[in-house]
Length: 368
Image (tube, rainbow, N blue to C red; front, side, top):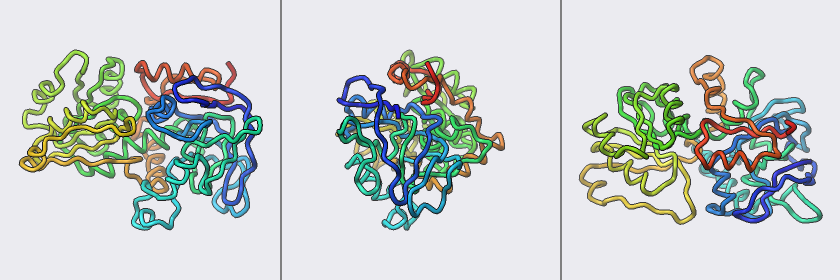
């Protein structure tokens, strides 16, 4: 099959032929129909985040089941599925208490570059090739654990199912699962990429007001307004803290940081009102830190919390997001940006770096 291969950090992806083994026990072969272009993949491409090399990236995707391995009970050939980069083992303490985004088994996949058993199904010229986060969907096919799949309704397009499995569940989930009830509360969202725009949709669902989005790309800010933001701040032209205080003089109850930049995180906590909460969603380079004034935490009782994968329970939350989409409550079609054939994947990441609007989508089976 054809796949995008990362051989060294900081170098372009190479689209080439890669061998893919048949699925082992409790694994599934999926024909990839669509894969989202995510900043997390970009972090791995640059080396800000590390994984075993060589590797086939791509962790946000959807497709159709082609074959199943021994012991698979939930899926059959022909089923439409979304891919999850945080599988749930169902046995660790985090799965048992309903926090599968923190499943201990996911660490096996991340560190080994394999699937849940730590081994790979990918090879090239006799060389072992690794999986990224147990998915590797920048390819025509992928083999994944049965636990890394969620059923997709027939009415949901593959592109929507793909972005729902990462950007949407992360952004909407950060609001629904971490912020929670916030009708009438002020919320500021830093970053208007796929996750930030999804957070806007979550804030609209929960009735937050005002909903302010901060970014440096005017077209992204325009999109945020179309999706329900009440105000925007262009950080390339305005003093963000001053602008936010004009919008909400007492400070914001909530801030979501979907970029992963120390300076942005520091601004986010500064503009909170006493008792406000910063939800950190964006990833940065390994070892990145940011400063928080101690007395601000104590005297104003501000909080900083992290949210991985929207703090979601994907087998429950993803079907709920699909239902909301089909009911017209989540206009996810507006999040879809430019589409790319697999051979143009480096162009997709170049566009992402330069502030493209909407989620880029790789279509592995589309010709040039």
